[in-house]
Length: 549
Image (cartoon, rainbow, N blue to C red; front, top):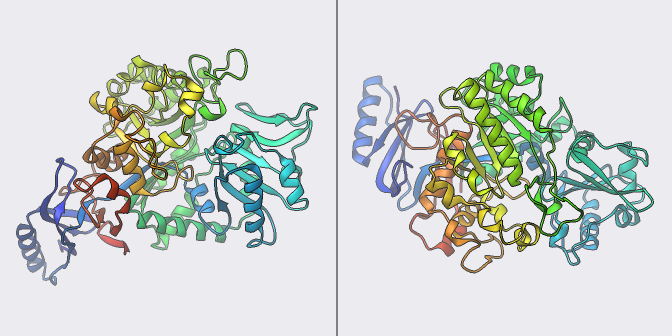
């Protein structure tokens, strides 16, 4: 064995205890082979390299910086994140429908031909907060197709040219779990929701070449490395049965070229036919690219009243306005039980309390029928916006990981109170309560819904405040804040558990993969106001430096 690299600091956070200590870690063949006091690690390395006739290892002393496990984004959509952060598209929330159109005109100047694509608009944050239509886009772009994906990635806003190119007309029927908004006379407004929007995205994204997509992926990998992210879970956005946005071929091509700078765990859509997943699982068996399990959708989002809730929305738009499941409950049960029979974990998008409850019922039945999943594998629920009180206890009992995205809490100021009412608000994003019940939290971003800004994730978790506005003062439901050590563990160990790799990732221990992030300050002790000022100094994946400031 030859030690290649020693990383030293006055502040090493291994993740095994809540504080830091002065020390070092030694890397060999992509793994950590020594962790401890500096001199002990150096002595070990000298002895190992002398025995093998190797030269002395490189020593990187980071002084007072924080050395910690590489961060792991437990929930993002790689394809969309890559495209929307590349020159192929643009991103903005906008302040109004008119403002969005103006921004699209500016973007059009950079792309004189083909589709115009954007992401990020949130009409409930506009003034006035009204849903846009194709008419404003038609006036600005009478001859070019335009598609704007909403900030929550559940709704498309299209112009007439786009509707025509996508084959949508007055007679079009949306797929199950989706819908087309219409004017009073039945004409399409250009707003396409949920499964109907996801069905159209491949046709829109098909306008880009493989070379363009590869470049977009390279750019997004670089962004991850700049944020200290060494591992991700790439979760599917299902377009229609048999097709999702998991581009394992792009990941595999970059891996073959030595250009993968973060470990990727792909979760394709759970279907009755598991052959695609099983082929991936057999093909991607190395340490950099794996297919650990499946993803499914049970509901939508609260802001559009498509999240499935047990009681009508506080601002109900119609009688019995409770949203609805995007997949029939019996169908979801059949799918999950079939996966459980083979020992495959499933991750389910559940935002409303009814969706969470139904998913837990299915996981409970699967566990009772087939026993726990094989060691190291965990089912996960994604997002978990609001709970029925009795369901908070069930996640830990059923060993279900809560994959959450802290910046989501404040994306819609006042939205929880407006949509769900004050009685349900105390059961929303209850991180502290979940931790106290011994639930495993896994942190992520849901990028491109929010940026993969790792310091924003940590700031939101420990303050319950919006990373941009820093509101509300004192934090939203401040009793549910996490400590920084807990946040770091959720962003490393918890996410590793969601990927089924807790034995290899998430802590700095001998035998673990040598994924290391170096921050320019100790976020465990710094002032809360300084968390977002923190910069990543270096990122190591498998002992290889993939980013250095």
